[in-house]
Length: 180
Image 1 (cartoon, rainbow, N blue to C red):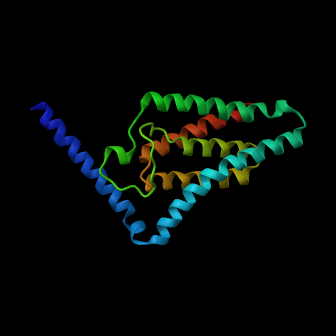
Image 2 (cartoon, one colour):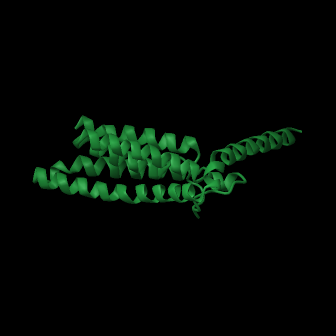
Image 3 (cartoon, rainbow, N blue to C red):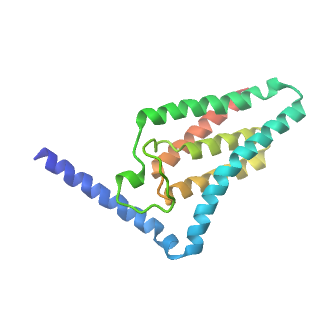
């Protein structure tokens, strides 16, 4: 009897998320230009952030003329990335397209390790690194990171909680730069 109740509750939750995702993506699916836009923005932001990070490191080295100035900007993102990756591996939560009967907008082969979103985390940490050097560019990149978070949920590769935790964790990790 207990197993039967659990299965009914799980099925009802599954139906609710599937309905939520269907409502969320219905306008995008109806317009091919919107679908193209979501996929392009997701791809563009995930590719441009590492480039921005590299440019930041080069700028810091050029202006500071010493390697030690780079250390916090290298150690904080890299160590927090490794720690986050270990947490993801330990939690090993399923991705929405694995757990629910949904047709994701962004096709991905990855299994598990959905929580927290490493793409969003990385984008936010890089944004905070830039924020430490220049406020307006950092704020702009934090907004881009939020757009990336929305694209990851809309794409069906992460749950809302995955991207929220990734964003907040990125802010916390990046804020360590302000202690230096």
